[in-house]
Image (tube, rainbow, N blue to C red; front, side, top):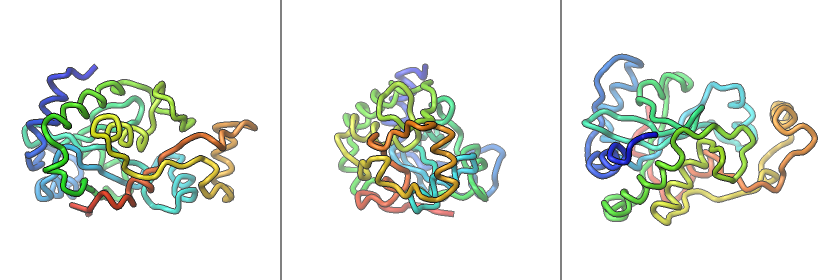
Length: 216
């Protein structure tokens, strides 16, 4: 498990740090990290190249199919994300997995006033609960397994009391295209959880509570 002290450092002391990671990897993402002044609590979005990417895009009418939350440590930027398993990923590594290395970073409006040290400490504590959990292929709302946008929503809701994005039901999405039907059949068989509560990367991305601080 990620130690509490590490999370505390990322959320509290790192929140006001600019992100200037050194090292190798995608040159565009490294340059972006050095100029965009990313802070803890920022949310990052990309077009994933995973097998389910196309289905997510079609179902949500958005190009963004994966997201994470920014952590900064000694001017090195990481993404806390729900992959397999939930873990910290260096920003360059995160960027390289996305289409063309591109990503967008958004921030809570008035974050400096809202995300106080006490709030960040609570977010840290809540986020720590999910470290190491398996990725949720079935997009269920329980805490047993976690998917990317669910992780972000729960950290903000449970840690800061803020709901970012609109909770929906699976049946609310556009499920009519063939790639979506194939993916649903693959995951659920004949027992699709149409009434399951879900939060999509698109819903968080489009939230009026956020504003864009960087995109490449």
